[in-house]
Image (cartoon, rainbow, N blue to C red; front, top):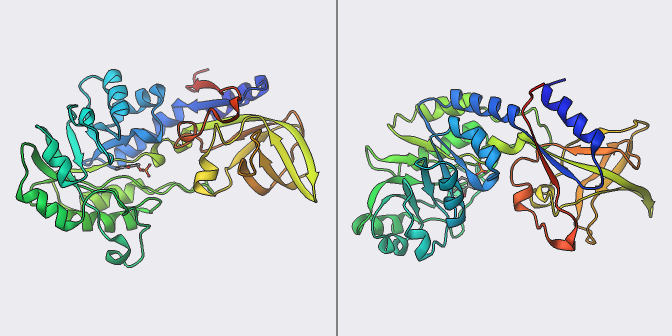
Length: 354
Ligand SMILES: *Cc1c(COP(=O)(O)O)cnc(C)c1O
């Protein structure tokens, strides 16, 4: 058993009626080190919106060239933690106060935004029709984000007071290394010679199989193969998803109209990930064991949407602890904490130290 799992078991043994998040910082450190090594020669920024917890950011900081922030709030949070660290400020709908901040790079979302900037270094965010340009390979993130090629041309024709340093795109999420490399080749086609290219995040995380990790080595090689001087990536989910656990206790097990339910402390107001992504959250049970049955795991909220996992095999009894895995990204911080006024979870940070 790894040190992280041993500590998880100890926290599970002490868990009361308030659920707990456990962040395995040792596992995160090792994961980040592997990503850094696999993507040598490529600039690595972490997309803070995936999880802005200060302990997580401190663990990642030595491995990343910078942080990608998507609001004035994230900008201020990260600037206070790491003065002088490079920040890329993206996100649609920037206010005048957002545009008055001084990041290393702004990711400009429209010609109007570029006009409003009084100074600074910018990447133009391009929005490409990935469905057609990659023959159906990619899940499109088009919508209102960034600019189509005509709008990019408009920016280049009148750059105003800011300096255009290159292009940025974040076109799809949940893609494997070959598909993301194909997208990167497409994005590079919109940059001028010598310009920086930021190709975004979106590296796949497989919630049905936590062991099926994104192939960082292949992606690093693919990006180096672009032959550009400055290529930047900004992963979020695939960096921090694996380090988080959400621990909750079984309160009740009952069969309603033939369907077996386990009712757990907490709910999707703490861990909204399975609802937002439409998956069954993987989990480990610390319990008395017994015979496995098909069961639906729900929380304490008065809504039928409060489901962690549907009709999965598990042996559960009141008092058992369920540790949901892969709860380190778009988990606590994307959840609606105040709905129903249940207590907030506890937070534990384990470092694998004996
Ligand atoms: C959310 C986001 C990311 C990170 O995406 P992941 O799927 O978490 O890797 C990167 N860049 C931009 C612009 C984003 O909005």
